[in-house]
Image 1 (cartoon, one colour):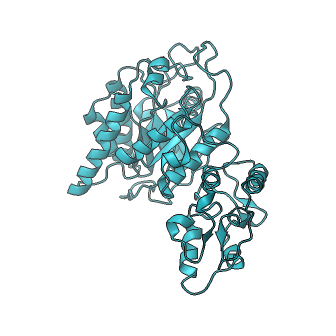
Image 2: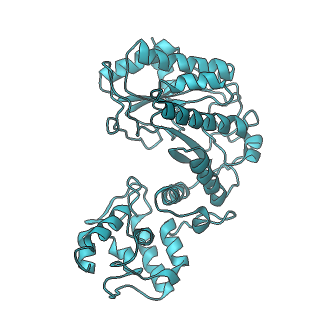
Image 3: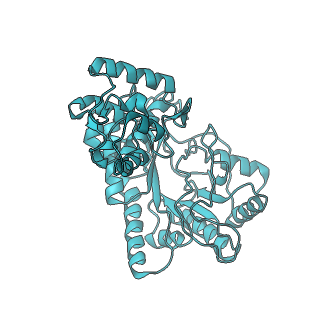
Length: 416
């Protein structure tokens, strides 16, 4: 049985991994405990990054590697602990039956060899499914450089897998994590995506039904947002990832000059998430949002920043502009654009109609006309000043949903 002391060590050691996600699975309950279907998982995050509905735990924090940015690095003087597969299984079942959790996020430091560590992780998820009859959500962190056969076997029993890239370039990996290499991380991700496609074509059953994710640390090294977003775009296109997570660098090592002394701004992380959403759902390219050598603007969200650079494309007439252009208007999200498209089939829309649709007119009015009428500012300096005031009022808070009664921003739905 896993004692309280080891449990505390292993859960505290896992808190820096923000790719602890729990959505998108369609695994069915076959008569056991748990439900991993879409909507079957509720999850919340504490201020220090821990997920409080998934059990977020390491099998071991006793790492052979010495990644300078990592709290679990070999040379760090911290308490170490390791759990067995059965101890984790019993913990999951006990917590689930008490309604503490609805699923599991399981990772591990490399406590022996990559293969031996991956083998223990596989044993854990295998036993949960076949011995303990658990059908809840499981997100497993894969071990880079482990054998493909081991990784594939584990993927049969989990809903989601992730291999964290951690640093945006191979140069940075060599500098701060010399025992890791880019190919060892990208290769299993690519192989899993290929295997998932083959199994889907041949109807060979479930295989990571919620897909793959990864995580990048922002600000530990000098890579710009442009470099980070180019890598992100390539991962979505070539590896088919469901999500890339960004984690502002938090200092855990003050004994090296290779790392920043202070924590990186959470606003930078927030802007990357906004840009990521625009890449995935709004049809933007990286070059439109950020040049390779640049960082995203902090004073404006990426869509506003793009619109200010392209004022010559505006204003758009909402009664005739195509959806793919409407969604580029600050203040008009995906749902809003489709509402506009459907409503204008029956009537000429007015600004009052847009307000009823919860279009954010405080932003949008500078970039649209309704039946030729325009109620925004024409001068760039004035528009910039008003938008900046809105940003300051919102405090660029990642989960801010409402300003009085008007929806202004949501990184949950991507409406901004």
